Image: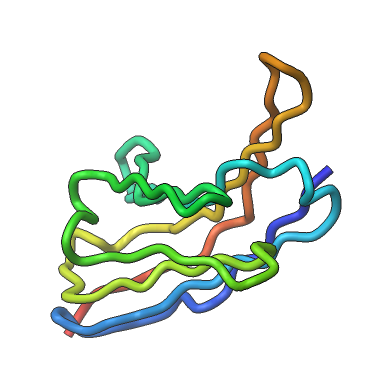
Length: 120
C-alpha cells in the first residue's frame, strides 16, 4: 500500500500563490504516476496535474500556464505550485498516486485532501 499525506492548503487572495506538498510512504517503488486532482463543491473531481518519475507532465485545462508540478530527488514527495490563483480554483485538492501492480494492472491511491480557499 501507499499512504499519501498532503500539506500546504489554506486561504490565499486572488492573484496569489500557494504550494501544496504530498509525501508518499509505503510501497512507493511501484508508483509510476504522481499528481493532483481537485474537487469543488457540486462538481466532479478533475485532473490538475500529473508527473511521472521520468518527468513527463500532464495538466488539466485550468492549470495550464499557471500551475507547475515537481518532485524531490527521492520522488517520494511532489509539489504543486499554484500561481495567479482565481476564485474558481477554490476546491479540495487531493494528492494522487498510481502504482503498477502487474503488466496491465494498477492501483490508485488518494490522500485525504487539503482545502484551498481563494478569497479576498
